[in-house]
Length: 317
Image (cartoon, rainbow, N blue to C red; front, side, top):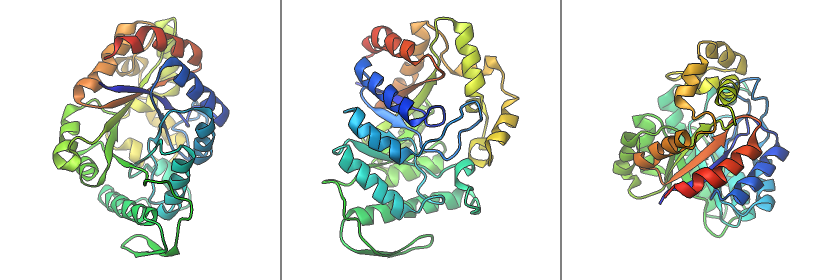
């Protein structure tokens, strides 16, 4: 039986709104939370980017749901030793209901300190080493590490959970999915592709959890939902590696001028038809994901949660 959670968008909402949505999600019957970790939104229409670790602290008091970062990049903008501390504290505050989702990142967020943006193969090597650093520190005690990319000297995390946080690794292509299978405690993605899930499992993932995130736009009028989804999230339909390579929201806005409303509506369930939403969720279930996290695009959050509580969640296995 797949678990259905809610996807909190730090690109689209401020911290107070995110906490309110988490409370509404739990009341509506969602079973977990994803939360994005960005320095910039993808475009100015989204318009937010609160510090995810502060929001997670608030979530620990606002809800009893488990929380997964989707996803944190522990390689360039923030050193993995600092992410290890943040994740350990989050796991303590959430009483073990925390998963650290990690990925190799996007230039959009990671270039802000002037660091060079490495090629994809290097980014994956950095991610693998970063996970080694974090797990070392979660063992407790004073640790030293001298790797190809990171150095840790005389470092000790004094606030630790009873068990280390699970690390789920994001992957969208064969190399990153194989890495997820080899080093991850689970896998996360946004693509309803059964071949990727199978590759994760055959690369060492076995029966470990596979999570996926998806977007919808509920409204009482389909036309309004389509316009909202196209206005706020056209970047979702950009092809190839643009999401990893473009450096600023303005660049994403320029590229998104090529994305039409029809292109967005073809991929994002828009409007009040339950079958559209159920069909999209079932694509992820059929692909083999164990957990699916749904994000509502736009301001009609209360209507979305009522709709999912009454029309969608009761229809899912």
